[in-house]
Image (cartoon, rainbow, N blue to C red):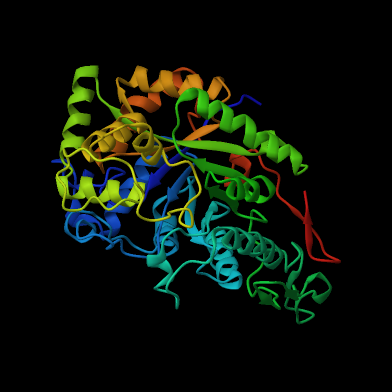
Length: 445
């Protein structure tokens, strides 16, 4: 089989991946809760033969600083509800949503994802996260998160319970025999009876096994604990954009972890984010990138950098130099590499605007369709990526530009699909459907 790079269409901020992309003249912020806005996004991604939609999510409103309300577009629908609605507007594309294992229960998640998989004919996926912010804890009965390592321990147990619940029913368990009156074969039903450190779940699930057996599982996170959980359980990893050498090292290291867990690294996809700013000429693309960067108010620049580096810079100008001295320990939020903190620590004095602009530029690929395709091809062929989660800086224009300009170039090079061949999302990712060992309810591939 020809190896082709995988594509996911990312959506978190409804106005686009840039926090103030909603201010761009082409943006439509008044439609962020309009079902047709999301239907257009999904249909456009399907027109570009993307493998999946990838809906990120958070269970909080970021109001730690005033700019979170004043300038930052955060309102968004609940993702599994939205994906269920998008089933009717799509035929082929995968439908993946972020699910927090810290603030959900396995039974509910297993049932919801199995339902989405049935409704979509085998297109469901989930992005497992352990959540990051204390703002989320305060919405679920606490003042602060569980410890970082404990969140990953809970996440590992969560995955095991969900998969066992999906395996409650054997594939031939439903008889629906009107003559005999037997609806189901009880010998092909397994009661989970899980009693662990974090969860007690009897089961069985009250919906039959998903068409894919197990919907495709994505994970995100660059910490050692996150990488280890992904290497042992995930089908694909969503990771941040990095300079090429760092991306190659991360790719090789994570694939080695997969091997250490006795799994096939060729059936484990590493999907960095890519944030393209594309236009028919380099100059036009540069102008668009600068326009987007300039759209961020100074207040949001200062408060966003404060949040990221863990140092309160509020009250300063975005152009006032500061010396790095973290006021708060952010390690319980995330232990993934923190580029802004690293740059701040290395510089004698730096400004919030300089950090913000540097991060924007490092994470963004600006240029013509050929330039963007060159970058994607180099990483795909150079051992840094199996595909990409594409973040569009402003919507809906960003996804239309990518599909109209970049996708034809990728297809011309034989890098991406020109049509949908496989039926399920698992098949598209080159994954076999897990079979159930009915005697103990465990899954073997």
